[in-house]
Length: 464
Image 1 (cartoon, rainbow, N blue to C red):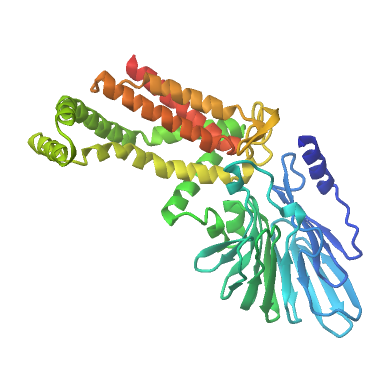
Image 2 (image 1 turned 90 degrees about the horizontal axis):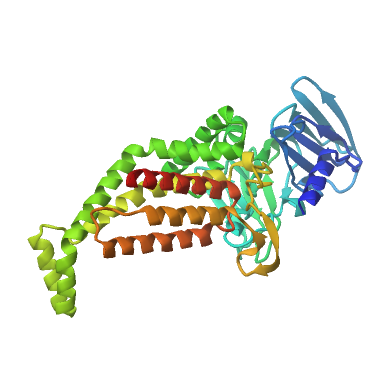
C-alpha cells in the first residue's frame, strides 16, 4: 500500500495533462484548463513541487471550477507569462471573456469574469478521506466551509441542502487541504449534501467580477499569507482561547524543528518543553493534590467507622457532621481536579495542533513511515473490530509507561488502601487512553508517550 501511494505521488508530480486547453506549472501548483476557461484539475504541492519532502494533493479529476455560461460557440485563448506569474485569457465568439491570474508561487489565484454564473466547485475521488480505523475516522472527515464572521463547517452527509450567503470565503476541505472561493458579491451558494455523500459540490450564484480562489494546504502561515480571513479555518471547531493554545504550540514546534531537523524528535522536545513551561502550574496542582491526600488520610478511619455503623440518610448526616467538625468542605476532593484542569486545555491544544499539522504528512520517524497516520509496525493476519488490522506499537509503549508511572506513584500521605485505590484509577485511565489513542496518528501518540516517559522520570526522582 505504501509503495502504491509513493507511485501515485510520483505520478502526480510527473503528471502530463491530456486536456486540449492550456496548462500552468508553478512552484506550488499544477493547473490545467479547458478550452472554455474552466479549471479542470489542480495539484497543490507543499512546501513546493521541487522540494524533496513535498506533499501533494489532487483536487479533482474533471472540472474543479466550472463556469457554466456558454454551451455553444467557439472559444479561443492566449497566455502571458511575467515575473509575477501567468495570465490566461479566454474569449468567446459572442465577445464574452474570462481571465485567470496564477502567481509564480503561492496558492491564491484570481479570476476576472464578465459572464454571469452559476459557478460550480467540485471535488473528486482523489480528495476523499484516507481510510482509517476507530476514532481515527474523526480526523479524516471532509467538510464544507463557510467563512464569514465565524467559520461554519458542514458535513457532506447532512440530510438537507445548505444555503450560504454574505460569506467572505466558502468551499471545502479535508484534513490537510482546502479549496475556497471568494466571490465579488455572493447572493447564494448551494452546498449539495446527502446521506452517504463522499464528494463536494457547490453552485454559487453571483454577478460577474473579480474572484479569488485558494487551492492549497491548511497551514497557518500559508493561509494568512493568502488572506487574513483564512487562518480562521485552523482548528475552527474550538473556542478562540483554545485556538490560541493550538497556534502557540504550532509555532513552538516549528521553532524546535529549526534546531532539531527530525519532526519526531521535535515532537518529543515539544512535550518536554510544555512540561517545563507548565512547571509552576503543575506545582500548584501537586500542592492541591497533596492537601486532598492529607485530608483523605485524616478522615479515612472515621469515615470507615461511619459507613459500617450507619446506613442511608443517617450515614449521610454523620458524614456531614464529620466534615463540619473537621472544618472540611464536602467538595474538598474537587481540589484534586486542579491538575486535570491544567492539563486538559494543553492536551486538547496539542491534540488538535498535531492532528492538522501538514508538516507531519508523509514524514517518517524510526519505524514510523508517516507521522500523520498510526505507526503501523506490521499488518496482522486478522482484523479486529474498531481497531483494524494494523498492529501499532506506540500505544503499547505509551500505556506501558503509564503503568510504570502508576506503580511508582506512592503518596506518603495516603494509607495503603487509599494508595491502592488511586493506583487502580490511574491504571483504568491508562486503559481508557489506550483505546482512545490506538487508532490516532503516530505524531499525537508520540507526544503523549513522551509525556508519560517524563512522568515516569518525575515519579522515579520523587521516590529517590
